[in-house]
Length: 172
Image (cartoon, rainbow, N blue to C red; front, side):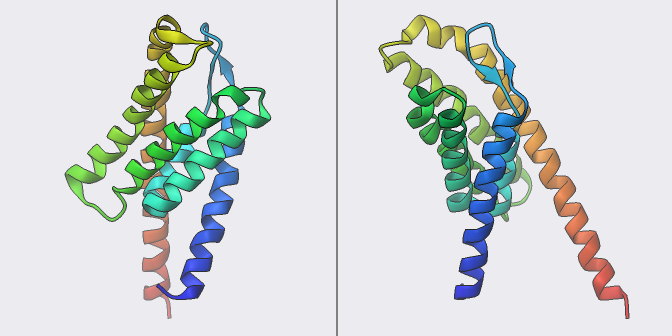
């Protein structure tokens, strides 16, 4: 990879890190257990598919952890860094893959946040097993929404860029 492409990828990663932070903070719907639903996972899944493993992990993990810090959930920032970084990494493994892996890896990535948050919340002294168990349905819905929305946006983006590339090659 040339240094120009490497620089472009880092700028995209940093830009999408900001997108993840903003989409996480933009619309927050409180859950009964004290957390909130947001659109951040849509951006994390999209980033993984677009940027690959490294970019997905960095944008997803750091962008989501920054949102925790900015929104008063600082105690969750380290756990979010791991959970969303892992989600972005696993989704990023699907970049360039076709058929089965393209669909299953983002699903596994989205599912990884449910498992990671459950384990992390179980070992956090201020939360514990009972609260972590109560968070499972909300985290599952969040993951499902992220998977569906992120894949949809990436499919739309891919179609748009493919159509644009076709137009530029057929126009004199």
